[in-house]
Length: 83
Image 1 (cartoon, rainbow, N blue to C red):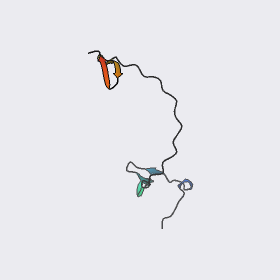
Image 2 (cartoon, rainbow, N blue to C red; image 1 turned 180 degrees about the vertical axis):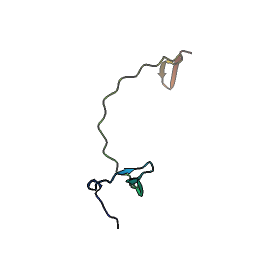
Image 3 (tube, rainbow, N blue to C red; image 1 turned 180 degrees about the horizontal axis):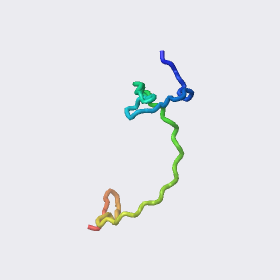
Image 4 (cartoon, helix red, strand yellow; image 1 turned 90 degrees about the vertical axis):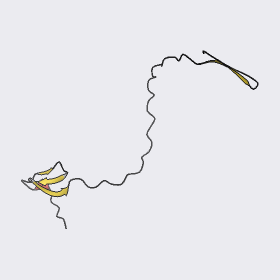
């Protein structure tokens, strides 16, 4: 069984965590990881509020080819382009 010791009340004890993630007490590596294993993923939280509207983006350059006019008469469509 593990013994729990409040290191804040023991004079001269200097707890640290080494670069490998283990507790080091007074310069001695304990072999005990300072962080436990990754836990299970939690439930999805509620959706937040809509953020403020952003600024309009800059206009792109006009294309050189495009549809100028579309007219429909019955089942016939006439498309006029810049080509």
